[in-house]
Picture 1 (cartoon, helix red, strand yellow):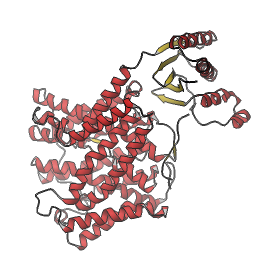
Picture 2 (cartoon, rainbow, N blue to C red; picture 1 turned 135 degrees about the vertical axis):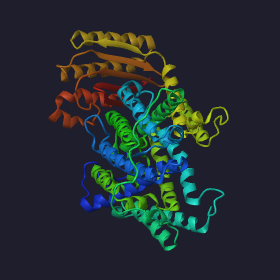
Picture 3 (cartoon, rainbow, N blue to C red; picture 1 turned 45 degrees about the horizontal axis):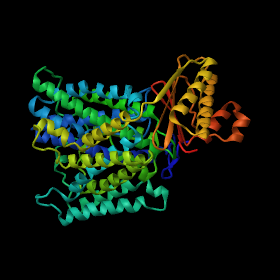
Picture 4 (cartoon, rainbow, N blue to C red; picture 1 turned 180 degrees about the horizontal axis):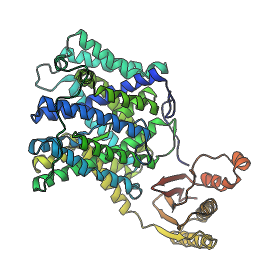
Length: 574
């Protein structure tokens, strides 16, 4: 059976309705987390590239609307688009250097086209994920989540203390504001009262803002020239593309950044499931595919709107674990509030300019929680020398990359942008090592069977040949026969109208024998917990599954892209 992973007790589950006012305030907490970071990147790029104030206003306006729309799609899920979990979208740091270089060389119109042109990468990763699932595993997702946390912690610390060399670096005012924000958020999060814990983010950041106002630290200058209600003074930048070598190289960098963003999104999509279910059993890979499809659509929408590409936001995942609130309705309200904020420039700038020490202090807690989420995902897979090596090397690569220590003088600045992205490098190393582990594995034995009665005879003969070839103990061989027979019988009996063959594969390592069964039958979860007495009374046709669950050391059923993937594991020692 799949191991049950208990998460913190949820106060509001996925389908719960916290009520109008509670949902509004809980949505506001998530907005505070996502909005500042989402707007901060395009604002800094605009400043560094000399973009006019008027056009900067338009970029903020468009970014806010796309963040709202794409977050709603991600949470709500429409068919195969969206994760269906409380997962928010925002501008992606993976594109930071690529966007800045593109704006300086060609302008925002090319950024828009490159966002659209690179979006199919996410759709392709989603479509082919049934082939990639053995490479981009929960362990790889956990590694990426941990690298995100490790990469962002120094940035959050710099927001708190200031940049070394600046006039107020580590000033008493910054240290007190950030420290109290962190302390208050932590104290409320540790409260024995669950109903108080859900407000930890709002109370902590709110306290930091109030302290900043009382100490005259908060700068209201950016708000002075903003209207309460209105549209931005800038305009849509349009679309531009040419086939010059420079543009094609920029497209290649965008595509690499999109692939890196896809790895991050896979990690987020797996992690949000882990923290959103009271008794997490297994990853829903159809939700992961939906997340990637939503990412791709969001990048197209961002390009059409003339702003920066989007990706999922990891900080909100930690917020779910801290507050115990996973309700989709909170996401709907947050998306609605974000959409309104876009048309209230003064409010948008107020949220965007929450003092750095406040955001830094609060986010240190959230990034620390992400480390725990990542470790739990990694621990889902059996720990052995090979998997431990993948984790260690990938984390080291991600850390070195984020510090800018991987061949900094070897590549031109345009390419070096990729090598200083710890998430991209660490994730790529994890994927390559995971793929190598798969390639070096002993070639599996395989048989493809029809659904007629003769298929069972062929299957039993195949199991006997495999058992003899691999020298399996008699007791283990018998268990494999029983498991194979029950699975074949269940699939043929419960999906008589299905067409296509049933494929069995098996391979061994030093400790276990693994059995994988694939077909296209439309069936319910086979690995849902079953009790013998209840099955005998209500569903006697599932008695075979009870046997499978009791015999297998690990039993998991996944449905990806219309295919069933059934995995079993047995110890080689009887």
